[in-house]
Length: 99
Image: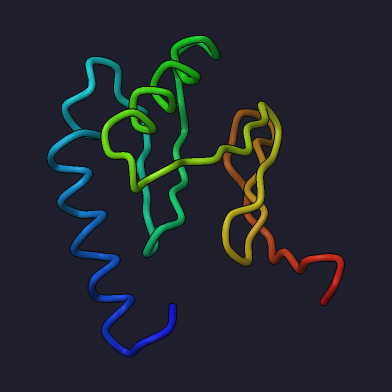
Protein backbone atom coordinates (compact mmCIF):
# COMPACT_ATOMS: atom_id res chain seq x y z
CA UNK A 1 0.00 0.00 0.00
CA UNK A 2 1.97 2.94 -1.34
CA UNK A 3 0.72 6.13 0.33
CA UNK A 4 -0.25 6.89 3.91
CA UNK A 5 -3.93 7.17 2.99
CA UNK A 6 -4.02 3.82 1.14
CA UNK A 7 -5.04 1.65 4.15
CA UNK A 8 -7.85 4.05 5.06
CA UNK A 9 -9.08 4.17 1.48
CA UNK A 10 -8.91 0.38 1.23
CA UNK A 11 -10.96 0.07 4.43
CA UNK A 12 -13.58 2.53 3.16
CA UNK A 13 -13.74 0.88 -0.25
CA UNK A 14 -14.07 -2.65 1.15
CA UNK A 15 -16.59 -1.55 3.78
CA UNK A 16 -18.75 -0.06 1.05
CA UNK A 17 -18.27 -3.16 -1.11
CA UNK A 18 -19.40 -5.39 1.76
CA UNK A 19 -22.50 -3.29 2.43
CA UNK A 20 -23.43 -3.18 -1.27
CA UNK A 21 -22.67 -6.77 -2.24
CA UNK A 22 -21.20 -9.23 0.27
CA UNK A 23 -23.80 -8.83 3.04
CA UNK A 24 -26.72 -8.96 0.60
CA UNK A 25 -25.91 -12.35 -0.92
CA UNK A 26 -28.54 -15.01 -0.23
CA UNK A 27 -26.12 -17.39 1.54
CA UNK A 28 -23.89 -15.93 4.25
CA UNK A 29 -20.81 -17.28 6.02
CA UNK A 30 -20.98 -18.20 9.68
CA UNK A 31 -18.03 -15.86 10.37
CA UNK A 32 -16.79 -13.02 8.16
CA UNK A 33 -13.69 -11.12 9.30
CA UNK A 34 -11.61 -8.63 7.32
CA UNK A 35 -8.32 -6.83 7.87
CA UNK A 36 -7.82 -4.28 5.06
CA UNK A 37 -8.15 -6.51 2.00
CA UNK A 38 -7.63 -9.91 3.65
CA UNK A 39 -10.84 -11.76 4.45
CA UNK A 40 -11.33 -14.81 6.68
CA UNK A 41 -14.63 -16.66 6.59
CA UNK A 42 -16.01 -19.82 8.09
CA UNK A 43 -18.44 -21.33 5.64
CA UNK A 44 -21.07 -23.73 6.95
CA UNK A 45 -22.73 -24.45 3.61
CA UNK A 46 -21.60 -26.63 0.70
CA UNK A 47 -18.38 -26.18 -1.24
CA UNK A 48 -20.45 -25.53 -4.38
CA UNK A 49 -22.22 -22.67 -2.58
CA UNK A 50 -18.84 -21.29 -1.45
CA UNK A 51 -17.56 -21.31 -5.03
CA UNK A 52 -20.78 -19.57 -6.13
CA UNK A 53 -20.35 -16.92 -3.40
CA UNK A 54 -16.79 -16.13 -4.50
CA UNK A 55 -17.85 -16.10 -8.18
CA UNK A 56 -20.64 -13.68 -7.29
CA UNK A 57 -18.22 -11.38 -5.44
CA UNK A 58 -15.82 -11.50 -8.40
CA UNK A 59 -18.60 -10.39 -10.75
CA UNK A 60 -19.77 -7.41 -8.68
CA UNK A 61 -17.05 -4.93 -9.72
CA UNK A 62 -14.47 -5.36 -12.48
CA UNK A 63 -11.76 -3.71 -10.32
CA UNK A 64 -12.03 -6.28 -7.48
CA UNK A 65 -11.00 -9.92 -7.80
CA UNK A 66 -11.04 -12.34 -4.88
CA UNK A 67 -8.77 -15.35 -4.56
CA UNK A 68 -9.42 -18.15 -2.14
CA UNK A 69 -7.54 -20.67 -0.06
CA UNK A 70 -9.91 -23.22 1.36
CA UNK A 71 -9.50 -26.20 3.63
CA UNK A 72 -11.65 -28.25 5.96
CA UNK A 73 -8.76 -28.55 8.44
CA UNK A 74 -6.55 -25.45 8.54
CA UNK A 75 -5.83 -22.21 6.73
CA UNK A 76 -3.29 -19.41 7.09
CA UNK A 77 -4.63 -15.91 7.69
CA UNK A 78 -2.24 -13.01 8.12
CA UNK A 79 0.37 -14.23 10.64
CA UNK A 80 -1.77 -17.00 12.10
CA UNK A 81 -2.74 -20.52 11.20
CA UNK A 82 -6.33 -21.36 12.07
CA UNK A 83 -7.10 -25.04 12.68
CA UNK A 84 -10.10 -27.12 13.61
CA UNK A 85 -9.10 -29.59 16.32
CA UNK A 86 -11.75 -31.72 18.04
CA UNK A 87 -14.52 -29.44 16.69
CA UNK A 88 -12.81 -26.38 18.19
CA UNK A 89 -11.02 -23.52 16.48
CA UNK A 90 -7.37 -23.19 17.48
CA UNK A 91 -4.85 -20.62 16.35
CA UNK A 92 -1.09 -20.48 16.29
CA UNK A 93 1.56 -18.19 14.89
CA UNK A 94 2.41 -18.70 11.23
CA UNK A 95 5.61 -17.74 9.46
CA UNK A 96 6.02 -17.99 5.73
CA UNK A 97 8.72 -20.44 4.66
CA UNK A 98 10.78 -17.52 3.29
CA UNK A 99 10.93 -15.81 6.73
